[in-house]
Amino acid sequence: MYAIVDIETTGSSANYGKITEVAILIHDGKRVVDEYQTLLNPERVIPMNITALTGISNEMVRDEPRFFEVAKEIYQMLEGNIFVAHNVNFDYSFLKNEFQQLGGTLNLKKLCTVRLSRKVFPGLKSYSLGNLCDHFGIANHARHRAMGDAKATVELLDLIIQNDENHIANFLKKDSQEGFLPPHLPKATFDALPEFTGVYYFHDAHGEIIYVGKANNIKKRVKGHFSNTDVVYKQGLKDKLYDISYEECGDEMIAFLFESSEIKKHFPIYNKAQKFTNAKYGLYHYQDGKGFDRLSIGKKMKGTLPLIGFTSFDRARDYLIELVKKFELDPELCSLPASMMMYFGYTIKTGGEGAAEQRERFKNAIQSIKENSQSFCLLGQGRTHTEKSVVLVENGKYLGFGFFENDMAFESIDEVKRIITKYPDTPDIQRIINQYYTKRKVIQFATQVQEPNYGLFA
Image (cartoon, rainbow, N blue to C red; front, side, top):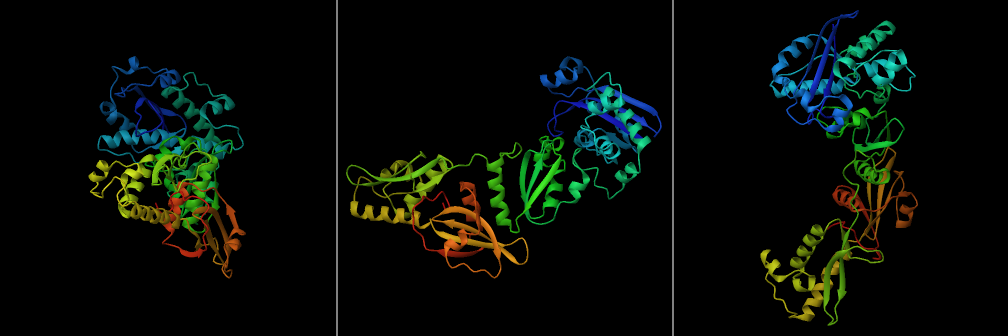
């Protein structure tokens, strides 16, 4: 027996939205034998755009039952049946979440008429319920209402059953992965995903990149996105995911670096982190009219060359405080009030006393920053057993990464430059390099400090 279900909700995520209407039609494989429908009071305001779509208003549901009041009836309708819906994971996740909040559970076999339609009727331009109804001449006089869409789904299921070539049986097999996949992602695409380390891309119906991720096992990580607990998946990505591509990286360090660069390059709508992390503030050194060395924090401006860059003022200030404490600098010469430094337990005298000694301390502090502007490369695993990966940093600035054969040895930085692909340097990149600096083999090169360090060891 099939339980064809359609629900209307206050939003797209089961964790934040609530059900406003539910319709269930019990189908014995030939015809509908029972039905259930009710509006529900979601106990929250229905957004205006949802009302405009469904026609369900706050006034309509004000006196309707809450879910817990009809939960037993709904469960009895569903129990023991195959849960069928158009984009089944959407409807199923909402109902499952409601039952879990009541201390219960929902554990049914599922069929998705979107995925089944793709198998049984390949080659159609769209598999939305509305377009399928138009294509097959299925009448739906109440679109975006639970019972109207449920009845349309029943007629679609009838067509699928009439034209089925064992797809339903395959979908219901215990080892089938059809049930958890997004509605528009071909199973063959998921099955073809590799289990190596790399970067993967989620694409929409137009081939546009909507999410970039990295993983030590691409297939395992992608599967993790399709769980009901995955944040990205909750945000509606599942309904827009049509294809997945990937790039092999071989080494986790390379995957981190490449992912960061690709996020900034493509600016995918579902990537929230690593989009706006350019260095906005710098630590500047200058001498005042009396010849005293001074350090100050300022916004980065075109044509200026800071000693070191930071993504926020707070990070720059914290760095400067530690620098003052470490080298016993006069805080008043570093734009840090002595009273504030006393709060951090710093008691050095101010007022320009010991000018020569202060000058030497400033010299040492500035030199310590410049010493972090090293030239080196980090070696990691390659994509095959015959190659390795290399990341190149020159004068503290990330240049890019590449791959080389195991029997190749580097004697100069120019040799490394010839095999790498160049990528932009950002604070996120520097953070990643800093993270792996002690975990990978390092080859040092002679350094000529010409460029500022953007936070490598800060």
